[in-house]
Image (tube, rainbow, N blue to C red; front, top):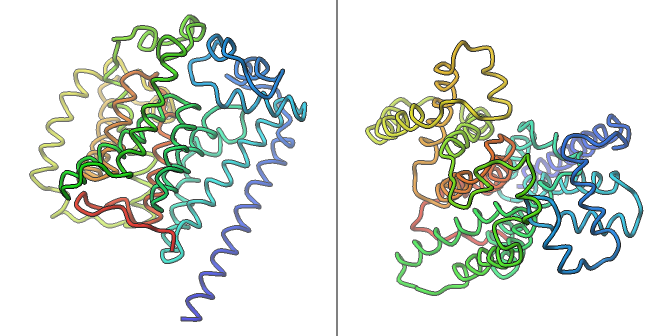
Length: 389
């Protein structure tokens, strides 16, 4: 037993040492985060400056900034500028530190399953969007941090704190709504099986997801009117009843590339034909194929997969790759449990989102966290265990 404990200590020391080395390397490689603004950083920085004149923004500022997502990250960046006058550097450093903390929360999530936790943290680092967007003044890391915190409290049965974390996540990006909605649906179905109607596990995520109505009331819609009025705003977000099915289909493909395949390589590397070629999987394949043939052309996914398939002749071969990756995802998450509802709700959110592969990142983080606790394949009939011990 002592040898096992000693081995876990050595693994932990190696992990944290390698992680610190990696992040310090990124910090110094990028000239201590002192580089010109990139891509959306210019717009995000202008918006952050609107909130840099005081510690508490006024109501008019919250209503009229020209961005599409909820304002908490811009408020935080503005507060950093108000306090430290560090420019882009302060916000970038915050995102890099949050990125480091997120990996640590996954890597040290379980004392009993140390190997699983460390492999899960490594799996997250394999996602190219994770480290890439950890060094920019983007809003993603703040939203993802609060989402992960929500699940960290949820798996430890601190449901009020979990609800508060999800409220902050939604205040950072509207589409974080998918996560408390998934928990609420999961807990509702669980409560129906156990005969208990009202539980804190159900009420807490319902309260969290209800916070979106505060923002809808404040904005007079899903986003500030100044943001929706920008020329670059996708049509699917400008029109209230406009939906894009292909974004949801592509989302399945993104999950296949950035989670299902890395998970298989890190944890299994086996092919069990008796589990792969089943009637249920054939039904999934037959259902998914016409959806891709109908809704995925023209191909509008933006990100790594689109670039990797760019050399293929014609859309049909490209769509075949997207279909295969999506099929892997559907087969992997065909069991109806919490992970299933997380996938479904995120696909639902993507009906109203620009088909950008980066949007898979919050779900990938949460899936790796659940994997680190061996909760990813937990069936519906069992409640989420308290993992604080």
